[in-house]
Amino acid sequence: MIGIVVSRADQASAHIGRQLLDRDGWTSHTDESRSEADGGGEFHQRDGFELRVFEPIHVELDSPEAAFSEPDALDYLVFVSKHAGETGRLLTAHFTGNFGPADYGGQPGAFARAAPGAQKAVIAALDRHAPEGYDIGIECTHHGPTAPSIPSLFVELGSSKTEWEDSEGARAVADSVLDLDGVSADHQPVDDEGPRHIVGFGGGHYTPRCTRLVVDSEWAIGHIGSAWQLDAMGDPAANRDVIAAAFEASAAELAVVDGEQPDLEAVIRDLGYHVVSETWLQTVGSRPLTVVSALETELSTVEDGLRFGRVEIGTGERDDWHTVDLPEELIGAANGIDTDAVWEAVANHTVAFETVEGGTLPAGQAAVATVDDFDGLVDRLIELLESKYESVERGDREIRARQTSFDPGKAATLGVPEGPKFGKLAAGEPVTFNGKTVEPHVVESKQVDRFPLSRSESN
Image (tube, rainbow, N blue to C red; front, top):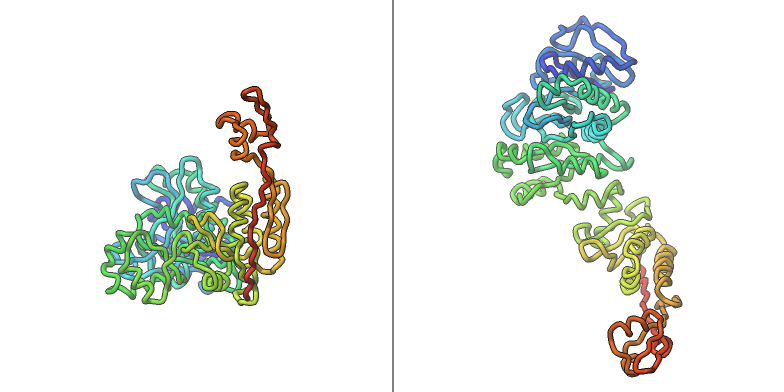
């Protein structure tokens, strides 16, 4: 069950609460065990949700989950709230905590347990429901509360009184929250692995990089320490416990760091966590991390150009694939014919493959699930060559491609002047000069290009 927290002291929160209750399916109940200010009195339930209204502003609510009918049955809390700032029409989500002092609720150097899976889902929902003119974004971690015993997140309507009173904006937030029905707090796309969460460090209060990762990658973001919060925290080495707490409250083992921050990265590594790039996250996607780790160990790393194909293997066990040498000369020739088709051919027949030229050209070694996959790759590359050559033959150790083409040397020997007449002969047209006609076949040569094959198979 998801607990929705509404604050009477927050104009936008109260408005969103009314929009929520305007939806069908709610039943009303009365809790006489606590005051209305503390979430008692009238409350509302529907399948998957319970809504409680509190008097204080959200940041002053230390443990609102205790007010709900069955606190132990709650998966996470959603605080519907206003967003204030010079940011125009904006719908946001974020987690709560303080990397430095607790100027706006909570405890210093403490964090509420994040709900990265719910945030990822609600950002997608906000994008679906947002009225025209509203932007969508993720904010860095800030303010309280830090004491809830279960995961939580804020979903906000901003950024001024005009938007707080906007029924369309409040309705968009309400519908987005209800779209969380059935969504877990954590994002776990691979059943046998832990949550696929990362912690963000650096950048501004509004985090386009983290928003992009949430929207465009298979990963979810936990706590985000923006530049101003890291400044408030101070020396990373002296605040190892704060950094460790951010990872723990995010259920994460990986981080992305904006800019050059060697001192921070050193502490992250010393704590046993890992810094990865946006490229790594986007490239790895939802693939099992055991498989990714094994392939990066056997071949090269993603940072050095490893890319993943579409052939899936179940585990990272070494017997699940063969390592082969890519036919680089054959790939180079086919790449000159159709670059996209070459990439598709390699991706469709491999588990992973190395690249050069900034990750754009397959080269080096590849992992294939079966020898047949390697043969299928070669066959597809041969098909591409057949659009250029008259014939292509595959042998055990090489590909032989034959073509007949214009030979400028022969044309020059016959006295054909360079320039347009060379062009006509190359195009298969006869030319006449000095009263003499030269037919194209007279200045043609047969050419055989050879492309070596070597599987160099290993298990």
